[in-house]
Image (cartoon, rainbow, N blue to C red; front, top):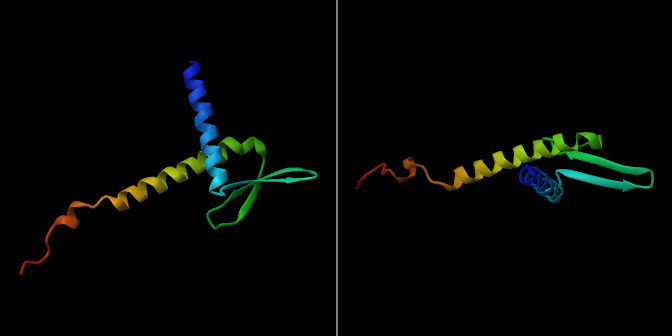
Length: 88
């Protein structure tokens, strides 16, 4: 059980670091407090409550996973690319 909990917490920390490095998640520190902002699909940032941080990280993880699968599928050549179209 402790391995499962530590794996989940480590994965969450890893995804949080990647979200900050990709500028999907921005934390601003002002004299009045901290502001958490998430980048939307159109590139604009929106404020969110720190309570919603796991939801934002899960959204970023899903987005990163889809981007990785799409990138991998673009690298792997399909069977159609190996088929000859015309002969001399």
